[in-house]
Length: 96
Image 1: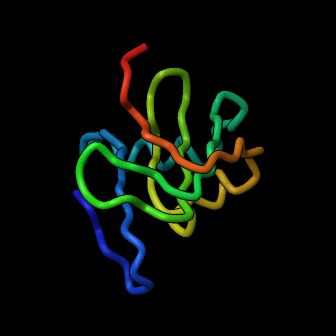
Image 2: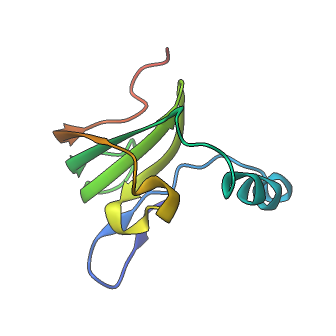
């Protein structure tokens, strides 16, 4: 689902957590180490559905995408991750 923002950039949240698990996960995330998380910043992110997202980031852990969307939507805990920078990114195109 594409969510337009007030600045004209669209965000594509990719978290696949159940509502009941989401609150527990957010409590754990505040103290969880980020060493197994990886970040890719892209000039353009092309989602499987919807319009391309400019100035985007993707956060993944192993083969699971944790977040894909506008850089402005990154959680503070992810801002310190070293980012690999690419021009164009199409996440989730292949299964590992």
